[in-house]
Amino acid sequence: MFGDVDVSLKNKGFTLFDFTIQGRAVRHSSPIVSDMHPGSLIGGDAFYFKDLLVSEGVEADRLLKLACLADIMKFYDYALEILEYLTLNYGGYYNFADNIIESLELLKLEGLDCNKIISQLQRYGKKSKLQTKENPDIFSSYVSKFRQLNLIFFPDWSQTESQIVLDLEITLRSLFAHPSKSKITLLIASINFSESDAKLILSSVIMNIFMQFNIDVTEEPEILLISDLSETEWKELIPYIHFKIRLNKESILNEIFKNIKVLLPEELMMVPLP
Image (cartoon, rainbow, N blue to C red; front, side, top):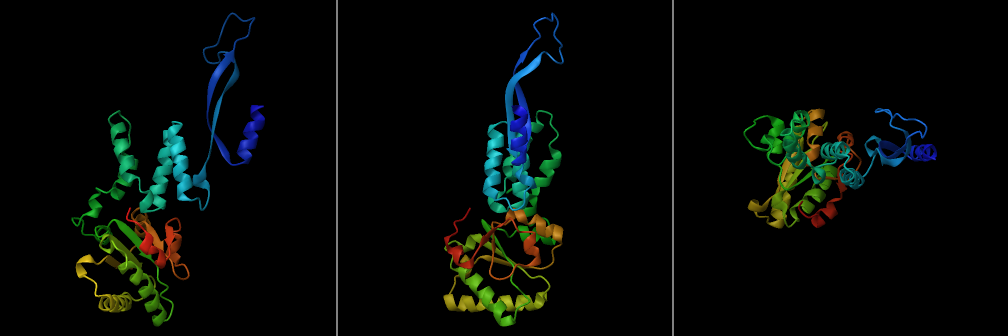
């Protein structure tokens, strides 16, 4: 019976995580019992989970629910693995760095070696030293300018200049119309395009928007044009980013940010601060 159930569940993508023994039967004619094998197995509880971490394109909410179930069922190692994966791959709304570190710091007091995972996640916590201006490297200078809501936009720089300007205007108009714009940072990726030309185009678009809407400079959002990061550094931005704004065709770097929630410019006004 159990063999049939096991095969059926495995065919549906489930993995046996544990089996707790509920009872054993000792041979009636035997006066002795083995310490290692104290009788034949009568029954027990089998625990199966789907390993969603090996699946492509799994929604973050499903992973979070799975982590909660694993925690409730006391599979703490699996719950931790899922939360770490969410933090590193699904952006700011699923950043559990502080929660994980706080829990593991308590476990360290019990003698467990948690230094590796703590050091890996420490830079993504709200109290990370990388989010201060004390660290002068380029990557840290960007992180230090992040605010409550962090967005990333990949303009298609291969278009004509007039179309690039139009795409930037559409995105920035939505940004400046947000009631809490002063608490938002927008990263604009300038890839395979002259940084000086990108700065010139962006400055012109921002200036026109300021003039049209008479925007108070004390309430402006943080806008960062980024072009000088390595692929590793791009990946390290993921836990800070809440949404990616999408207009036209995807950029090469969008593959790195594939799990970040997509936001259309017109939807930005309805996004609450995390």
